[in-house]
Length: 372
Image (cartoon, rainbow, N blue to C red; front, side, top):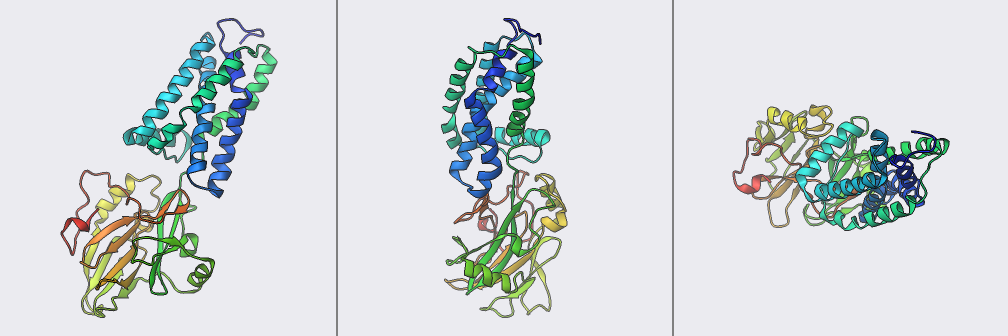
């Protein structure tokens, strides 16, 4: 860069764009929203705020980086490249699950654990690019030509802008922590984490939810119910059915496996499992798998009567979600009721197996309901 800049040097103008009040406001909003507001108020509003702020901030950031890498690049060309690249990239990623998966992998390499979700409703925030274009039209009239002023702005604004775009809020992966019975109804502890250091290690490390319709829909527990659950013993390794006292179930510690007995525990057979080899493959394809035998393993279970007769079994399987035995004897992976820091009212999708076909397993039921 020269002290005065030249007409062919686009950096003075793109740097003015990056330092425009609208861009700086978007930068502050993105940092505060990702690192404070999302944790305090997770949901639709804070999710869309990040998209809007990012669409205002990212084009001038791309334009500045382009003119720093290519000093003779005209500012208008850099601005158009920034707007088109950000808009097109955002549209493709938000409308394609495959593109979102690729973006997640690339961002994880660049900035650590990251998850980019395909969500067509995010496309509704694309008009925010209009605010970015407006701030460009205002900024191009006042390029930053003095070398000292440019250097100060680069040092003050560029690093936090890169940080805000690259290091957004941490990705938390859901975790099935524990099960319990509360006044005859099934209750589960669900949590989340993104590394070995913060995945839940005990039922108190998650959030409790209770179902009053046989594990179909859920609600967060009340403060009184939370206190009661914290005082009682939870997390059974073995339990028997009240309608069939000799029918018992137990987990196999360190495996994704449930065993059952028809003679009150004298002998056992496998009722459901993911073979260890298949489990290892599942873990390898999962982000931040950690200790496979600890996090991809059955933790505890409960057995409770079904309103229509028979009984159900609910198993907490760590990173693989919750598993349920239906009254007809079939087993199905129910997934999680935890998403983006809040408890859902109904089951979400269980973790997807990367292989084309589900892993072979031993079943008590061979109907399609045994796997989903």
